[in-house]
View 1 (cartoon, rainbow, N blue to C red):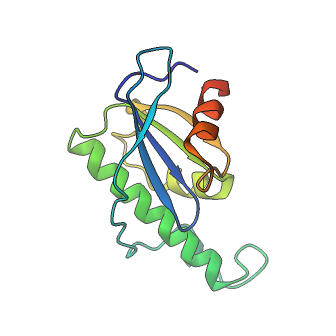
View 2 (cartoon, rainbow, N blue to C red):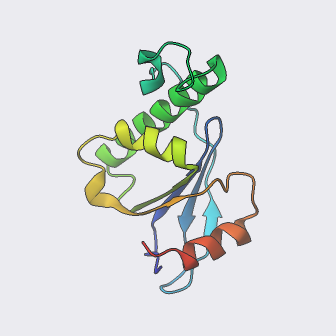
View 3 (cartoon, rainbow, N blue to C red):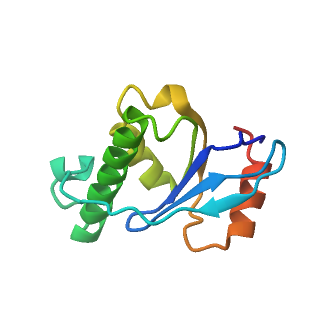
Length: 136
């Protein structure tokens, strides 16, 4: 995929977030890591509506859903403030789905792509390669 210069790349899982800015001139992807934002987990993810069961077997999963909802709240704020104008999200499938549930209607127009893969603990070179190989 061609990632526009200045695009923000969000990489997350149920308890970690990393943000990058693409500083490469198209079609080159050169990600620069941004400071880790302070994610205030006070939202309740969709898992809070379920009792403990096979759908949500433990508190760890509920905490991951809450974190994903808080990530979405952070993204919503940055898009509404105009700080994010092009966004590519990379997260494990469950976290990505939970983030999507909480996105403000202003976010989809700036969302340029998504990748359902957990790359939070991978080096930047692996992330850049995954983005170049992504379809959208």
